[in-house]
Amino acid sequence: MKIELTPEQLKLQEQFQKFVDKEVAPMAEQNDREERVPEDLIKKIADQGYLGSMLPVEYGGKGWDMITIGLLNEEFGRGCSSARSLLTVHGMAALGIERWGTPEQRNYWLPKMASGEIIGAFALTEPNVGSDAKSVETTAVLEDDYFILNGQKKWITMGQIANIFLLFAKCEGKPTAFIVEKCSPGFSFKPINGLIGARASMLAELKLENCRIPKGNLVGSVGTGLSHVALSCLNYGRYTIAFGCVGLGQACLKKSVQYTRKRRQFGAPLRENQLIQKMITEMVVNIKAARQLCYHAGYLKDTGDPDYIMATWIAKYFASKMINQVAGDAVQIHGANGFSREYDVERYFRDSKINEVIEGTTQMHEILIAMNAFRNI
Image (cartoon, rainbow, N blue to C red; front, side, top):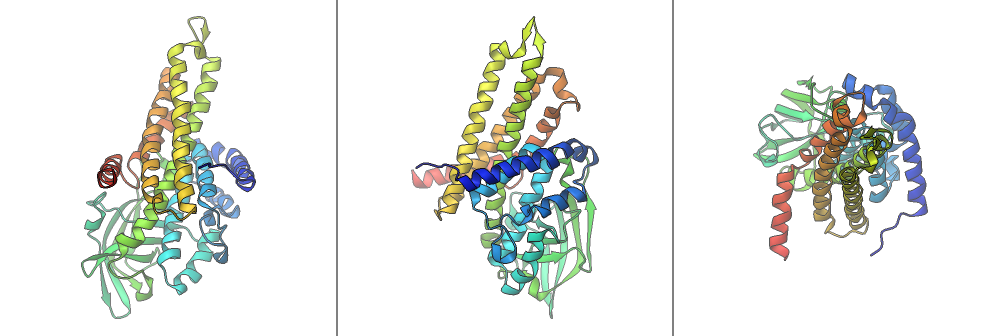
């Protein structure tokens, strides 16, 4: 099997690189400091059509293949982890509606999401529920033509600015997916600030107090929230996060190589130190390995191979562990300067850790990958 980027993919990759270099990367430090992605940057991202990258052309999206979507997330990951997270959660919400929504839901919401007129977010995690998603405590009860929702959601990426949420609650005791608008009666949110990394992801805690949403906002059917809706969304999330880790790793590598060229110790450039060369070598190899795992997962998805699910788990697992090693080495190479906000690797180091938690922790990945091996080997 040979995975090679097509001329069109290479052209788009160059476009992504130029956009990130001009619009995204220069804002990353300010985004981190102010703990927000500014509205004008989000508008520029929307104007490029990137918020519709995963949606079919019929809804105003780009209809790009998974490899191209991966390239987009790699470049955004290189520029700003928080801005990249917008692509993930908006895409998860949009794809959940596109695959499991009714024709009315798709025709109404997806064109608005593709254009960036509205921002979507994915609301599964709760104060007491993380990896054990089937145990969500938020409830939904049908009363006449409305569902009444009660409960809380926490750590919701882009929750401060999202207009709609693909939100999960127990209905008739079974996990179920709903579209919840921010303007719904009984809905409120509280910003979450002071995170260790990805500080501009604008996380929020959501509160639903007798929140009323139309009966038509049910996505899929009662009881299919996790087994169908969430599963497909999370697979997309893991895939984009894995590519984002590759991009962040590339940024770490570039800054480290540049630093070792100009920094002198013991009368010679740092790059001549063999232990430094060892760290750079490991960076190069592990980044390339992670990228190939991502390409493989994207290729399997584009060709309709059911093995893409496990390939995505493996890519996300390896890439998220890789970036923590690479970012740690980047700080080590910079020495005391690596702890200073004057150097980007300080932010890269903080941003890297979240990737081992979101869309499935490293430990959950280890359990599932091992179980798959036990069944098939």
